[in-house]
Image 1 (tube, rainbow, N blue to C red):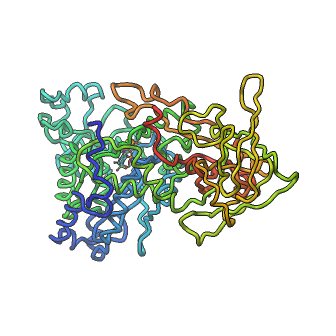
Image 2: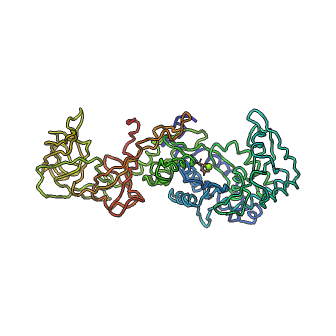
Image 3: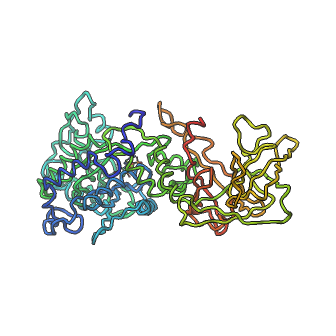
Length: 598
Ligand code: ATP
Ligand code: MG
């Protein structure tokens, strides 16, 4: 893997967006050759005999998104979702939502529910026309079994009774061929009898496995009589204890694809060396009459690897289980539930996935590209509001006692049709602590003794003094205001000032919890040089503060998004916000200042 993001096409290059990529080139050629035109479809997944009795498949292509329900989806899965569902939409095809739930031990209904929710949230649907393409590989257990019976009968597979250690030891290495199992020449009749006993639960775990009979000397280790089936006395989240035989991924996946009439089976690069096995198995099963050509075609592409991120369910689970984050939907995680809670929009995630392109070579993509896609989307969508995150009291000494008056600001500076918002000004305000300096550094245009600034949407003021506590900490600032300087009134422009401060009226401000999230890792490649990713965690990835907000924000509902002027984009937390009392999460800052801070 290289440390560059240069493999991904630039956002404006023709191969980004809906432009071309090598997968589209393959699909275009297949369609032009009419390769899939004669396929028939039974209306549901099934073997060839049933499909032959169906109609011509209304889908020009079929793709699938096949997660294992053993964790929450992350940004890497979003890439696969966008690709598979996107291709189906573009080509008049269908994309199947398929749970690859053939491993009984690690799978749970909770994950199934969250995955369905995430795919829908991203904006995709497995319902198309009159088809509802939601499938579970566990519904194919009988098919897997019957095909295994045929494979042993036809001499393409055998029951091996070596234990796991012996199987491993006899597999050979990249430079040495493997050794044939002493059970390799069992007769088809003996294999079939054993297989039936295995199904009946008459043999303990580990006592036998079913292996394909291919070639123990193959230079491709995956073809050295791979294990297809094993015994597990485990409770499955859908099929219960009906089965004690469970298929391996390499056996199950091609069959799942073929049963579902998948034309293009898109997976990540690490499966490239498995493709010969995928093809071998489907060719044998086609000979057995289970499937008709054209058989599904496996196509590999590079995983999405954003910097400052880990994209592996196992590693994300480590963080959750060690309590290093607050659950799967912690806003710092790259899970889709985490990104959603952080304030990411489905549109931004889709744009990022498109812009990141489809490549044949693994590389890192700058997480800044995801944040950039988000800023592009939120700049248009988010209403503006004022927030003082680190409040310092400002007293206007010549303000008429008890006087309060409204100020007006646009909801969105580029969208006048969204109207105006109003908030009060009074003689006591909160300003940002960093907007005042007792001794201004060179080029500081904000508030300091004797200097004039404009209170955004309000008046011009001049700093007349300040107070400090015993520790030398500034506790309040005094200023006088110019009554004829109010923004939007005639003559206000006569005041020429360089600084423009945001503020909220102290007696009217909304006090709210604001969570300032930052990147979860300090290192672009959290696992570089063999490091445990947990050692690269950013200790300051979350800071919780009590901020003073524009009073209009009291009516913000869950997932309402705002640009807090000068600070960044924020979202009202989906779960912790209460009516009248929103809690805000910082989604992203206005600019990418990460490099500058380090
Ligand atoms: P993990 O290692 O996080 O468990 P996985 O690949 O084992 O990931 P699956 O549930 O099997 O997870 O994945 C479902 C689909 O999503 C697969 O087709 C897989 O190739 C794809 N996918 C997973 N991670 C990425 C990624 N980082 N980039 C692109 N596609 C991905
Ligand atoms: Mg996996």
